[in-house]
Image (cartoon, rainbow, N blue to C red):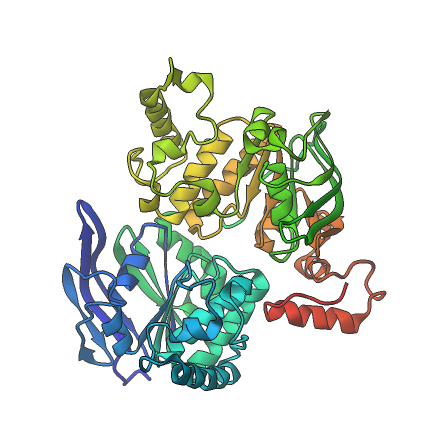
Length: 534
C-alpha cells in the first residue's frame, strides 16, 4: 500500500471568504483502502476543505490529485465522476420520497423511471448484502430512523460507484448503537478497498476506527499521525493548542429543596401514539438529573412538555406551584416566566432562527421583557450591547453580534443558545443534547457551564444520547425505554452495560431476566433498530 499513489492528495489548498481565511496552504495525502480522520475545532476549516474536494467550493489556490492524476473538480458532478461521494452532517434527502427514489435522484438512466428503479433495486440488494446496509427500498424517508437515513446517504454514494467516501460528522445525529453499526459498515467498506475520510470531533471514534488522523487548527493543517501512535489527550492538545480536560471536573452535588416534581406524566402525539406512559420524577436544587435512552423513547417529548412545546396530562409542580399542561398558559413564554429555561435538542430548528443575527437570537423568547423596551419599540442598542457581552463570556467565535446565525459553526451556534438561556439565571435548565456536533474545546466549556449552574443551586434536566456524557455530568440518572422510566441509578454505582440493558428494556437484578430477550434487544440496538422485548 505504501508504494501506491495516494487515493487523494491535496497540495497547497487555500480558500478565503472575504477577510476570513478558511483554509491556508493545506496539503494532505490519503492512502487507498484506509480510513483517514480529520479533526479540529469547529471553524478550523475541515468542512470547507472537504467541500472543495467535493466541488461545492473552488479553491483560491492549490491542486487536487486523485489516484495519482491531477484532477479538476469544478462541481459535485465532476467529483462524482472522479469517484468521490459525500455524506453530509445534515442529510440531503427528500423526506416524502422512498429510499429507492432518493437513491436514483439525479442519476436516472433516462426519461422513464421504471428501468432506473428496477436497476436500483437490484443494486441496493447487492450493496445491502455486501456492506451491511440493509434498508427497505420502498420505505419513505420520513418514516426511517436517523441511522437508516444515513445508510440511504451512503447507498446513494455507492450506487454512483464512489471509491472515495467523505463523511462529515457522521455520528452527530446517531445514537451510540447506530454509531457502532456505522463503524462496522465503514470497516466493511475499507476491507473492500474503499477509501474513507471521516470528519469528526469525537476522539473515541478517531481512536476506534481510523488508520491515520490529520489535525486542523485555525485553518491550517498542524499534524498528521498514525492513529496507533497517538492518544486522545495528545490529539486534543493538537486540536486546541493547549491541554484539555477530557473528563468533567466537579465536586459531589449538595441537593437542596425539590424544584421540579413530575407525577404520572403522559404524552400522546398528534398521530394518537402514547409517547410518554405515566412517568414520575423529581429534580432538586443543585442537582443534575440525566435521562439516558435510545432516541425515540420519550425523552424528547418530556423536554418539550416541560418547555411548553407539547401538551400532556398528569401533574407538574415548579417550586411547589402547579404548572399547566395544556392551553395558552402552558406555552414557552409562560414557562420562561416561572424560571424554566430550555436549550432544545435541535439548535437549528428549535433554538435559533438561522437567517437572523446573533444579537437577535440572544434575545428570542425574552424580547418582551421590560428591560429591552424603549417606549413602543425594542431597545436594539441595549440588546446588541448585552449580546456582545454574552458572546464574550461564552467565547463565541467570531464574537460578532451582527453575523447571521447560519454563518457560525455548530459549536458556536450552541454557545449562542446556551448564553441566552443560562444568563437568564433560571431555577430549572432543560438542556437537550448539549454537545451534539460540538468540538472538544467547546464540549469542555459547555460542561463547565452546566456544572457551574448546578453549583449555584439550580436544577438541571439533561437529555443526551451520549452515555459517557450522561455518566460524567449527571448526579442521578433516569433510564427511559418505550415511554417509561425503567429505573434510577447513580453514576458511582452503575456502568454503561447496566444502563445499556435498561435502555434495551431490561430491568431488575442480574440473573433474573430472560437473557435470550436481552441478547435480541442488544442486537437490535446495535443495528439501529427498535428493541422488541420489554
